[in-house]
Image 1 (tube, rainbow, N blue to C red):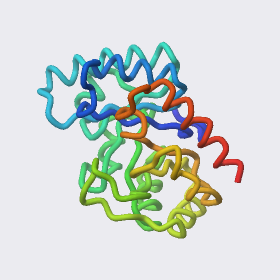
Image 2 (image 1 turned 90 degrees about the vertical axis):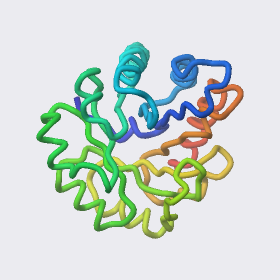
Image 3 (image 1 turned 30 degrees about the vertical axis):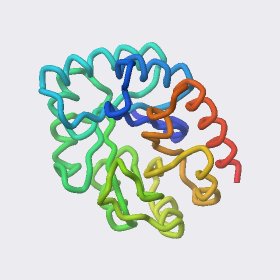
Length: 213
């Protein structure tokens, strides 16, 4: 299974910090109903057993909506859960090694911050890039901000889909207009919202409008 550029349009990244009265699965289902086009499960503090259980539940939800589903960082969980793939950062296992572990059928996304990292990831076998941070964000406090000129250069340099990430919300994503990004990856702009379904729907419409430019 490989991805298309439109799969990146609204890429939701989970964060259990905002579950509150709902379970993460309930939040994900609301985001799927709202129209997200790609889903990444990110967990930093669960045991492997609990992570696998959660991954299996969320994978089933994503399958019902035919939305690609990847695991952040954890290749073992991606393999055990039967997820569609994995997303890795610059400090994780090299993409070439990830590809050997997962095989050719799985999706591999790689975080990139400049043209050099982007080209290296593409050459190594990445299927898409997550590029940012667009804005400073509480989710990744040490993330450096990528200029829109660099974002444009990255999009022009590679032949794989690019999702912009980092502090993106409905009312600030127009900065990406004209950069060539295929979509946006969003954490709090979806999962920290009171009405997740509505937030996802409105974001999706805003991204489509931004991409027209």
